[in-house]
Each structure stands twice: as structure tokens, then as C-alpha cells.
Image (cartoon, rainbow, N blue to C red; front, top):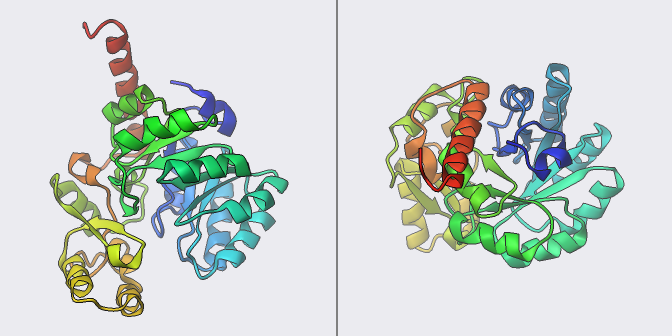
Length: 314
């Protein structure tokens, strides 16, 4: 299982770990990179000191390629960018907006730039700006989402740009990987599946909530703010949706949501914390080591594609 994405990033398998805030730590990211994928440190809204520590810890764990995902809405954006430039990070991904204003700085520093996007129009602009690859993220993803499904978004983006496209959203096993490659993607990004790995620092209660999830376990909150977020339905999500329905101001909604992600995914308050998770939650099944997740996903995808190549026989 090798595509042009592997050559571009220097990885064995075209599997990228989503840059999940507070969960994309050195423990998970280094495990993904050691297993042949691309581990991504999720900077989220974390302060620059935390990001620097994560970068240095992953460097101690592996010489394999890794990246850092920066959230363009972070209050520490400029400071975090300064850290990744100072630490000579070779790959950067972006989320939560249009990174066009920053791509030139990253490229001048010799970085590979992989924006996460949810529309074809933005994909085209970022290719012209110098992006090396693009993550086409469908609305099935956990966290910040767009409004187009992965199945519809990926082939349209593949047809619209000449750089590699990585499929994300609703992918949690080899079936999803095979489908993504059939749609023209050169690789996949998985987030929710890696939460339920032995190396992920997510609280055990959060992992257990994902394992128990069904197909309609998630809901999208924050539509009124312009930054919709997919989470597992719980007390907090219901409160947030009710506040939106009542016309509560964006400022008050943001204050209400402050600190809730850590509360849920790290501290384990699965009713009052934010549980960012994709719709793939109902398919996760069990907690496994990262290497097993990657190798099983790739092996299953290879088997499916081989079978399809024989006309579906066998």
C-alpha cells in the first residue's frame, strides 16, 4: 500500500492521524509515525510552551516524519507558528479557516503544507498559494466540520486540483480506506479511530463512550456561531443547542464552551464536557495499539482492492 503521498511525506503507509486538540500529543503522534503513518501534534488552543514540549518529546521518541496541526482560530496562533518555525518542524497542517496568508512563510522555511479544507473553492485557492497536499474533510468528521459529505467532497476535490488529496471523515477501517482510494484520494486521515488506541491520552470514560456509540450518537453544535462542531450527544451538547435555539449571543456561547473540551476528553466528564467525535464512532469496536490499527486498516484495504480488481470474486 503505497501512493505518491508516501513519497511526498516520507512515510510507509498513506495514513495520517488527525490533529486533535489535547489528544494529538507526543504519545499518540510518535506511535503513529513509528508505525509508518504520519503522526500529527494537535496544537488546538494550547499555549506555545505546550506545543514546544510536545515537539521536543516526539523528537525524542522517533526520527520518523511528523507534523503539527495549527488551529487558525487559536488565541496563540502567531506564538505557535513561531515555535514550529524555531523547532524546524518539517510538516504543518492547518484547520479552522483559510491558511493562505501563512503558506508562504511555511514554504520559505522548507515545510510541507497540508491544509484541512471542506470546500472545492478553498482547495483551488490553496493549491495556487503553494499547498503540497490537501485534506478533504467531510461533515462526518469530529470537531470542526463543513457541510459536504466525504463521499461527495473527495471526488470533486480530486477533479479540481493536481496535488494529492487525503480523504477524512467517516473513515475508521480498511473499508473506508479502500473507498477513499477508489474516489481518487492518495491517502486517508483518521481521528476518532485513533482516540480508541492504547497510546492516546484520552480519558478511559471518553474512550468507553465512543465504544458504546451508535450510528446517530453525534450532533453538530455551533451552527449559529459560524464554526459548527460535531460532538457526541450529552448534557452539554443539549444545553448548547438549547442556548442556540434561544438566540444566546455568540460571545456567551463561546464563554459557555470554554474549557469544556479538556473537561470531557482529558478529565473524563462525559456529560458536562465536549466530546468531539466523528460519526465513525459506532464502528470503532475496541481499543487497540496504534500499530495494529494501521496495519489492520491497510491489510483490509489491500484485500478489498485486490478482490475488486478480480471482478469481486474470491
